[in-house]
View 1 (cartoon, rainbow over the protein chains, first blue to last red):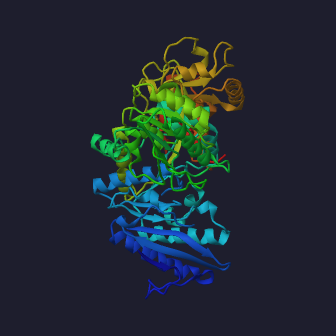
View 2 (cartoon, one colour):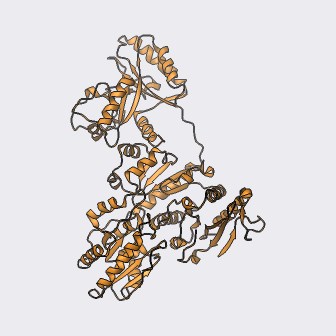
View 3 (spheres, one colour):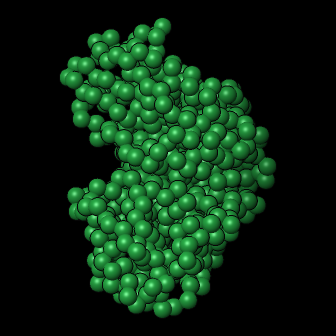
Length: 78
Length: 551
């Protein structure tokens, strides 16, 4: 399972950071591009965005990617 | 794109996505709002999923905005050929700028009559090019929809019934599930409640599974050949249910459809998917309705139970009675035939709209419904642009181009299918709008406000289902040399409107030369105008579509 958090620099998408809503547009576009790339190029992937932390003016959305065979029966928070 | 989080919601999307992948023309991506990734375990390995949290339960508006922006940006990146929304319209998806020019379809699950009306009158259905109803017309009719909703569904051309979206597992899958869950050949009692979440804080799931667990205890001594399988669902949040020698408890079971078929008794919350998949098999059916959101599961359960099973409350005594009775009788005799064409119809519609979405569109010219009250000597063939006009009482008109005056209609059972009825008199007391609807009439025409008021009052006093659609025509009394006034009237009617209706009374043009002059003058003028004459059929369709616009 691979994960990173929105707000990462475009040059290092796997690095975990938090998203700053004051510059959310750039972060969101970068995250969307990364997700779209996964969707287009890697069949069977599940990208889960359901986990997040709300820190007032700082929202952290955790992006987790998993292959078809790796989804277990456990719950995720969200 | 899903807007529901339940077991059936996700399963329906995954079934359609797998069928799209099979067809090989489009790349399916499921965007879901599931609270548990377990619901995606049964997905096709070719199907990608992007899972969001349930957007209407986020803790703050800022978080919701953030997710909405991310969803919009993602859709902009993906640039979909077509979007299929599932279950019912979600306003969050409706406003996404990235989808503004994308063809949208709705795969509509069962809705109760009130909810359907609320969504319709708020314009919730208007943004879809096609709405695929996952029901048969007969089942839809049994839901108790309003006359306007029925008229919109029948007449707008935007709704298609595709039937249940579910799969019937192969016999080998059923046998495998039976062997796995009842290895010693026991008879299975399968208890399931979809994904296991509660619609209301009433502990439905806990009451159901606790009751079923008690029943298993009570039956343990006398029925050693019976094994209970309790599939609580990944959202189950009640007290833990303990397994026992005759009870297995699972949070999630990917082969639930096969288990329903392998069961001797199925005790289920009668949602959409589980119920259909159970009806494909022969298990005795015990329906335990929960409080439901927009679908009145209790009423649906009562309707289904008249043919296939029984309805029970989630308490041990009731369940014990029904389960004991079911165990004492052979398997159910009647089963629902699998709807093999349902998913194929959905896939065809998706392909069709994906292709259309890439073609250039055309602007529709202004439209005029022209109705002529003829004089005795009206030519059999009108000048070319006027041939689409409807002529009152024209015996040569095709069935769907007939205009009949209400004054000429007598009470009978004769079909009037396709005909439009011009309200030219106060309706007789022995005839109701429902009588006309039953004879196949869909469209009423009124001339000017007085007749419109009469027709409106008549309809309100005796509302039919489907509703009769009403088009109001402006009247024009033709006289010799009145062609310029007539064209001026049409231009005025359409100056600020895209559609209008006009009834030209030609009855007083008793000189053939005057009639010919007016008709040719009008035809010549029409040929140069940015409008087209519309048919009665088109008018009815337009009026039915207007029932999908917000009030």
